[in-house]
Length: 123
Length: 176
Image 1 (cartoon, chains in turn brown, cyan):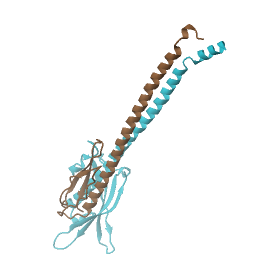
Image 2 (cartoon, chains in turn blue, cyan; image 1 turned 90 degrees about the horizontal axis):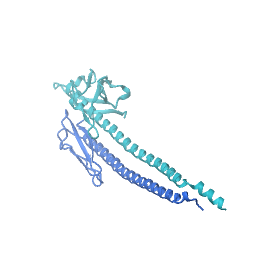
Image 3 (cartoon, helix red, strand yellow; image 1 turned 90 degrees about the vertical axis):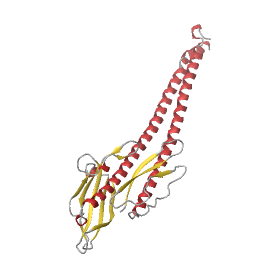
Image 4 (cartoon, chains in turn green, cyan; image 1 turned 180 degrees about the horizontal axis):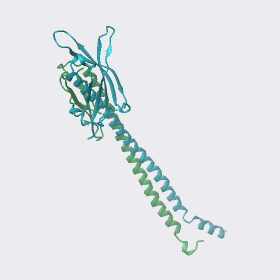
């Protein structure tokens, strides 16, 4: 049997506990959701970055076979889901010119585009 | 029995609250750990991306330096006489080379002749180019981003002056 002044104490404690546990659980789920979103965004970033560097290496490799003034055979750009573009010149640069080439890869899921500048030169 | 029930009820007062607070602390610590790990991973990959972009900038700077050597030195003297250094002061393109986002970097390229005698005792026109972040001082060997030995293939067909036909990258080392 309870004494009069103890009546309802446990109920109040349980209610407070439920509120606290609810808040903490909500925070945990929010953290998890944020982490999952960040991880996905990170995965897109890393994949786009790898695509970008592969494309840059392919363009530099193509420049190795350049003859000044000849058609610059730009390698095929990666496509969906990580489409890439470049502003590579149409012809190989002359012997005393270095041409900066901006490469852009656009990842899916609204991840910002990745841009890399590489340089081509006729050997 | 009545005495025992009263003791248990008095001892249980506040137990749920303590458990809930303990749960809150543990869950908070786990959440903070997860958040820290994720943000650390994101920061690390951004830092790595910028470091790689710096290598591409250094690579471009080496290309600009090769073109400068080709353009400014008499072909027969390349690799036999002093060359460089190349900085944004004499090659504007080496200033504010683009990195990830809006960041930029100034690159310096030091140039050293590295002549090499062939079997018939003619000299090969080689130079060693070292690219680093420009600090206004010669490149510290420990901070060189890329070091490359370049061969300038010079053809001589009198009466025309010697000219560089093609350049060859003989060695290329990246120091990240």
